Length: 213
Length: 184
Image (cartoon, rainbow over all chains, first blue to last red; front, side, top):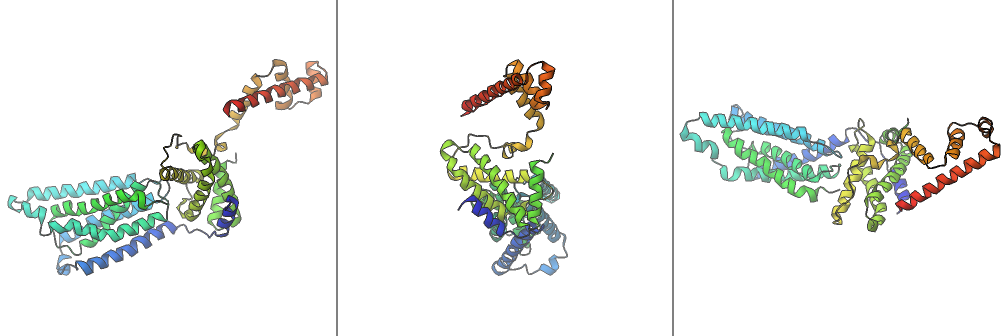
């Protein structure tokens, strides 16, 4: 096909472009995969049985606030990296600040606790599975985020993959917090954070190949 | 000055609103710029890939119109996409780029040349012409005097003025040809 033919064909195919098209695509991609990941959590792990009582406690909301904050920064970063030459400098700064703030809070709680509680604060009852479960729950989200980005125009694929992974990890841990009964902030600060970073790493490695357009 | 950026951006805004005719004009213009952009960056042995790259980029642009933010320059958006497609091409074919990839200016070369540099080109060309002819060319072609006016003010005959101009222009033509040979 000659370039002139192609141009004629593309011009014939033109539809008005909505200004909210990018946001809409992100909402659809992340929304659908959120539901998928949520159903996976309910079916595979089950909601925590004490959800009603727990929702009256501080740790539950702390966990929720931390993961929700990271999820919002991450989803926003996906939007920014989806544009050609998009920069996510500000998102990475915000995310780092959030991680450090929560880390400092956790270190403070750890330091003030009696030494005999230290071990429990770090390992809880679900150490062996927590990070793993979060990573599994973030996989549908990672696929959703990749679908979002493949239809848009990220030009730095490794970075875009990292962002997609971090956002999936954050949303995955948000969903996981409805199953998980751990309440120690130091536990959350380590194992939930790791649950955000590992999908980020997976996204960084696969982004170069999976996000090509 | 009506720059390339202003023109393309206007066309793009009309295209986003659904105006197919503006869109066809835009794509035509863009295709020309892209061709030059890719040709300049492909090695001699890969020049034939330029047309594929142009079509590939046009298609990518078409499916990703939504990623153009209307408050930003169109040429920057286009350049980012073209640059991505070029790098992707290099990666796929395992080509090591030896040409600098990063000059956004090169995508729209005309856009950034202003009248001042054009004048400097003319001036430097005129320097290579014998002084007598140079003066005649300057008065007629640049100041816009008529042959008759120049003839009276220099005291030459009209035909002598014409011959002088003709010689000068021939000298310039020879010089330009020589330049083309140097580059090729």
